[in-house]
Amino acid sequence: MKSLCGKGLRMSKMGLGTHPYLLGFDQLERLAERAAKGAEGYPPYNIEHLAPDGFRITLAVAGFAESDLSVTLEDRQLVIRGRQTETGGSRILLHRGIAARAFQRSFVLAEGLEVSGAQLENGLLDVDLRRHKPDSIVRTIPISRQNRGST
Image 1 (cartoon, helix red, strand yellow):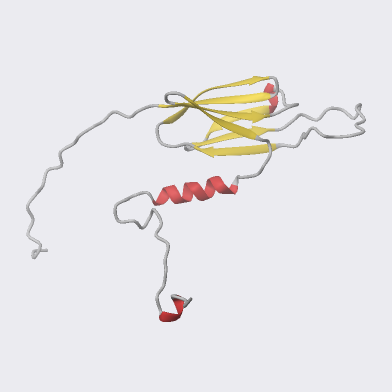
Image 2 (cartoon, helix red, strand yellow; image 1 turned 90 degrees about the horizontal axis):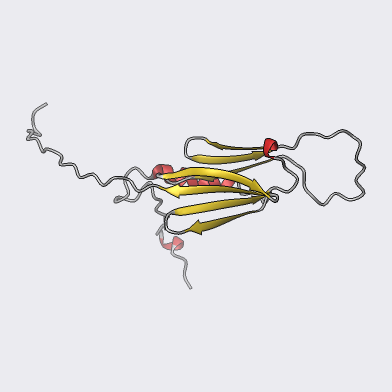
């Protein structure tokens, strides 16, 4: 099989920012890259679809108290942080299987997706999201007449 590159043909990947019918979506690629950077495996989580227009993110945060956790929304990015307070040296662990390290987990939210609440129960942190449908607006753009030859 002959290589296409040997004939001077070049294959290029067309991104969302360069597609002629998707104007202004170049930020979407950057959001996807930013979300992929935070793809660490701790803590484990589930994402559940709640019909008709909701989602639930559930993080396994065993050992974290409510005061050890924070849920913030930073420019369409949901950021969940956990940092356990240090207990005195009174405990001697023979085996440590429950992770107690600090974490930060980020989720990029689509336009119209809002956080409706967060609950901590039995070592699971649930963050509920709801999609609000935007109002459909039709706007007529006036067309003006302009001579291209004049400056």
